[in-house]
Length: 442
Ligand code: UDX
Image 1 (tube, rainbow, N blue to C red):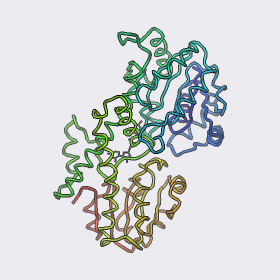
Image 2 (spheres, protein in one colour):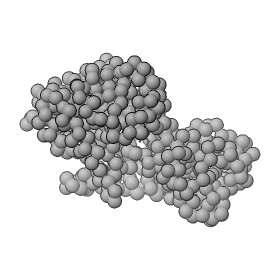
Image 3 (cartoon, protein in one colour):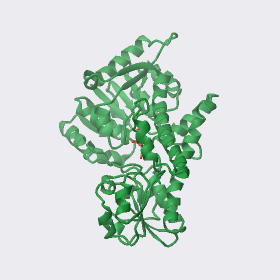
Image 4 (cartoon, rainbow, N blue to C red):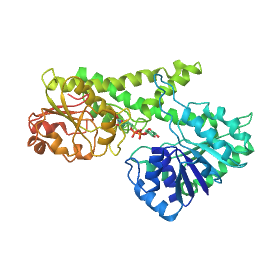
């Protein structure tokens, strides 16, 4: 099928390349000239495993093209909207200006029978608001949320664990004939994944929008739940990692997303829970998701806790002390530093007068842009040399698995390790003579 993808950020670029790899003819459109130039030249504008290969193959076969001109999207049967919905400056709500301008730009391109499929994460009610304008062109509006994780984006796009499509519905809540036709076109787009039994859920527009924010709110709540347990563990001498293992054996609970530490960040979970709470307020149901405020607060407190632990480990003050921060990205396998807990901890320590050196295998360039006051060193061992304390804040394998206490001891001045992700074997580090500090661990 001929497809267009409007917006080529983390979501859109991967979606475009993945759809081309399935045999579709895809054009990716973005207003950012540099980004389009990079993509058209086969260069991924951000770190995402597997994306460079997909770009290379798609460009070589001619099935993947890029443009800055939305008019080049004309002729596509399905137009995916994959623009960003960042947090609005000075507010909790989502900034929908990119969605609105993408739809405005697309309207003149649409033909009767085309399908517009929104993938961006939007406040519930956005699709209904946009539907009239789209439908006046004879095209149909659907919402097809995306659940990809950065670092796994190619895998998650090609082998999703479910596909959700919201379509126009009639009075009884059943899809309209036009909605069913639009869903049928998306079935064709996703035929490969559906062929191996991927669950396929057709619903109304509001439910589709809500599925995405509910999933992210649940994940954020799960992380903050275990981090709240870490806070209780800290005043009782309990160990939150053993607690997580033990409750995780209950398959109603599950062990995944019970990793206590400095909490969640990135371009999705933090802004999505805030936007959800703001939207619920507008709907007069603020109290229904009032707990999301606590989820956010617990999450931010854990960053402070990591800073406190470094202070405590260095005898109360960090001023003038050399601290090496392992990680800047919000999680491993990503170069994304948006709302990164790791970078937050590093800048707080710097603000308290510590001599901070930050290293990261992928995120230094992005980190330097947002926190230019910090010192960045690419080489891990160079970054660690002469440190008084080391803080692990992004659990890259290079820090969690491939750095032994014996090796670290040959580099650092001090013997202090603060494990902001509870990724290290505390007993092994203590046995090697380090003062080990975990999050919610004795
Ligand atoms: C998330 C959702 O997982 C994805 O489905 C959605 O489409 C977009 O938002 P992503 O932002 O890529 O994806 O990151 P994710 O892997 O979910 O991690 C989010 C944050 O939570 C990271 O900062 C991570 O370090 C943290 N985290 C994760 C924990 O602190 N503990 C855990 O146990 C798991």
